Image 1 (cartoon, rainbow, N blue to C red):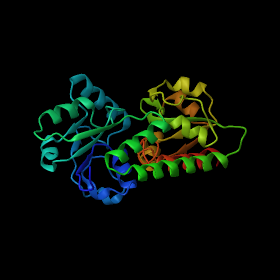
Image 2 (image 1 turned 180 degrees about the vertical axis):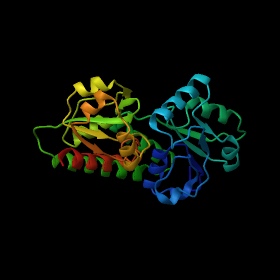
Image 3 (image 1 turned 135 degrees about the vertical axis):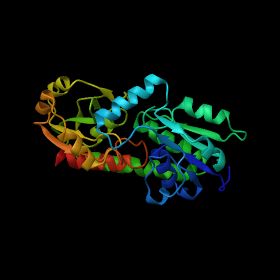
Length: 286
């Protein structure tokens, strides 16, 4: 594939990977959630959701559950927009049916196209998986060398974070990806906590994010609770945190609580995961 291909990205992480590889000019369409780097914000949006993102997290969770129960995909693809953009390559994902277009929705859209684009599916659950996805995108764009440089740079920054953290004791850390209901952050986040010099007490590397009762979370007795809701910035996370009234939650929140922009960092398996480790280190160690 040459340098003139047309690329549609269906998730923010893929958009950020393309941009970090120096190929922003190849993007012709992005998802409704893509917002970084700023240069992509004027591009056509090819996805939409019926769930109002300004609702409280509990209402968002219930709306997603209703959509799933009704068989309606929470994130839908604008098939007419994709047809009009005529991409050569679509970047998709198979990690989360809530955060981006699912494989079934995409397959239905592709079946209706006369001209079939190539599809590269990202499916990382660990940092090594993220690096593999970056290489996969690089190969698809004929930018394999640039992808290797990007991965090497991320690995270097992670090593620097680890080398500058105290060897002991390791603070017990709990990272929350959602507050109503409470979800413990999984996938690559426990690896970030380790790199940042902490001990993740809520999840193991590579396992999915999952809900747990407030009482169970309080019993973990973490030294630091990091609130980083998926898709929310820090002010929104703080607002959601202030609305939690559960008694066991308030016991948990008597611990030291810090906030991280989950939308920009921990929830996106792309280049800014290196930033996430650096920020976690600062939060964990004060």
